Each structure stands twice: as structure tokens, then as C-alpha cells.
Image (spheres, rainbow, N blue to C red):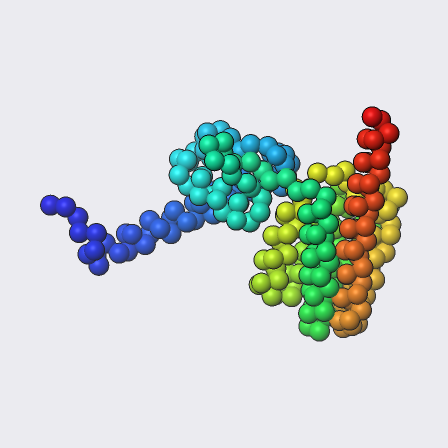
Length: 240
């Protein structure tokens, strides 16, 4: 006798299957995202569906759903009959993303200054101390990781879910821009000092100042990116 799909007794099983499928898709999306953001798969690189499915021991169905999730988040592009590729971000789009990020950073500073706790201030100062240490040791990679974490913490501390979601989405997209590291050793001490001033403004509860400092800090990053891109472009023309 065929199963009655409309029988209410089957609803729990159907719901469990949906939850399991959604959870697997989300986990796969997170795993592939990590491969992209770590640089394991470069911008423009193809996502090998068979190899990734074998690596994680899954069928291609949920993996394709994961690719669609990553496409919606701006990390992947899909081409008909060709497959999925890590999206590339050019200089124009990267500059536009930076402009949005500057505004989001400023908003986060304004929101957080009015409610930041002593424990949160201490946590941000710890990041600042670690960045100062990285600056003294000219450890660009460590400073870069701490810098990203510092700004992410400020946004997370606002507890504004919409702001957090948009901010993290565009920061991930910015990572797809192919560029040499903007944090050259000679620039690191200035970055460290700017971070200290940002934390001081938050500790003082000065939302306007925190917003201004965070905006200028992000805008400075955008200007450095454009300058480096122009220098690289000029160098390529000279070489030609």
C-alpha cells in the first residue's frame, strides 16, 4: 500500500529530513567558504564539484545547494554548462565595497560607544596590544589577522544582527580582490596608533569621535589600495 504523503503522521519525518538537508548544505557552504577565504581556491578558480564531494564524503545535490548559497553571498559565480567559480573582484568594485565598509564601521562605532562595557574595552585593548607587538616585530601576517578580528569585534559588540550580517558579507567579498598586502611593514605602526585612538574614543563613550575615527581609518585603507593599484599598473606599463 503506497505511503500517504499527506498523512499528518509523516510530517515529523519530512521536517527532520528538511532540517538535516539544510544543516548539511550550510555546513558544506561554510567548509567551501573556508577553502576560498584561506586562498586554497583562488579568485577565478573553478570549484571542482567531484573532488569537493569526495573530500567531504557527500553527494553532489547538497553541494550544489551550497554553491548556490555562496553565489547569493557574493563569493561564487556559476556559469551554465561550465560549473561554479570563485568570483573575482576588480579594483572598481573593491573601492565601492570599501566605501560601504567605511560607513558600516562608522555606524558600528556610533552604536557601540553608548553601551560598551569595561570587559569589551579590555578585549579591544588586548587586540591593540597584540597589534603593537606585531608592529614591533614587523609581523605583517599576524597584524593582518588581528586587524580583521579587531574590526569584526567592534561590529559584533553592537549586537545589531543586520549590521553584523552585511558587514561580514562585504568583508568576505573584499578578500576576493587580488592585491598585494596593503599592510606594508612601514605602515603598520600608524595602523596600530589609529586602533588605540579608536578604543580610547569608545571608552570615553564618544560616539561621534569613534564614528569619525573608524570612517577615516577605513577610508585610509581604500586610498592605499587605490594608490598601490595605480603604482602596480604604472609599473606594468613601464615594463611593457
